[in-house]
Length: 484
Figure 1: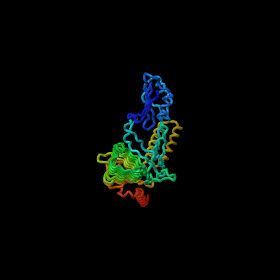
Figure 2 (figure 1 turned 90 degrees about the vertical axis):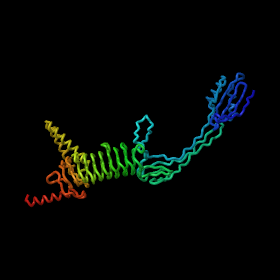
Figure 3 (figure 1 turned 180 degrees about the vertical axis):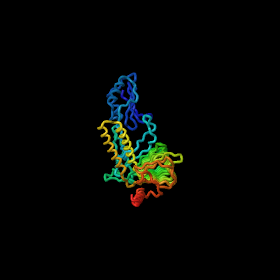
Figure 4 (figure 1 turned 45 degrees about the vertical axis):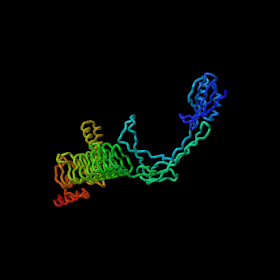
């Protein structure tokens, strides 16, 4: 009996097929709607012979299946059909799907400065303070390249027909400020320091980053090559590195703050963990329990409290006190009060580079160790060796003491009150604990009698060395008159 084909559609698989009936079996050939698959179903009958491989090839040809037949699947289907097995929707042929073209896009060369990690990933220890990511660039840095769209690749159906692919879309991109497109038409280069921004179809380098509120878990720590403005507070545990400067309209907590430019903020309570490293000047209302290193001036409105201040400029506290901790300023110090009524230990050092101070302290420790060892040894050779070491150390100390700095002004101005347990260091040589003293006065080094000289207060614009030179000249005249 000849096979009787009938066309039937199927709604369950979304394709169409044909049914072939013979005395020994019924075969259903199904082709997917996208023509990328052909599947077969086989139902044997009790009477008649089972289907052969040649018969199956004929049925596939009648159904229009010309390509993509899977040899192993074909052989397996024929073998199981000949054994009288019922088969359902067995995959027999596969087409080649089309590959859509890639859309045009930016391939960034510059990398993000902060790695963003998901809080949902329990396999890693996640620092939720680091949620902000920037592509930071400097002038001349290659940002990336504009990659054109690709056409993709056409597919092929099981019926031998080509399947047209979807080409990629061209990137609609406008080159914005601070970016230059090279002659190749695709390479983008930064013309300013800042962060790469891509919004509204425009790419640019922004030199400012403005935080509308607080720096908290919603913003995260910030590393930015430009200028940062925070219109709220910076909460404990968050850090900000802003290359061109930083302004915080509110307060800063126990944070790490760093900038090569000026830093302006209301106040900072570092809780003995906060740090500031500033390449410019600092302006603030108050600083509490914070370690500060500043290349410029510190202009403080109210107070410095229990902080470690190191400045290569001036430190000026207008209305309050420097109380507790230490304050070293190469260009001089001026404050309303020093210390407190509770006699908290306060150390002020004017006219010295804090880097020299650290080396000076190290050398003094080495000299003390040398002296202890010298007193303990008895061998002449060892004593001579230690004396040689001491001579080298003393020469280094002398070099530090005589080193001059253009910005140095070993002068401390107190406009109101200096309390007990205050220590005044002037340069590297004069170190003196002073008694309570009413201001206003200027404290400078007394080169004639040693120690501290208290004189009528003058502006920090007037150098301590010039004032002391006048005393030296007067002393010389008096000595000459007395015939000394």
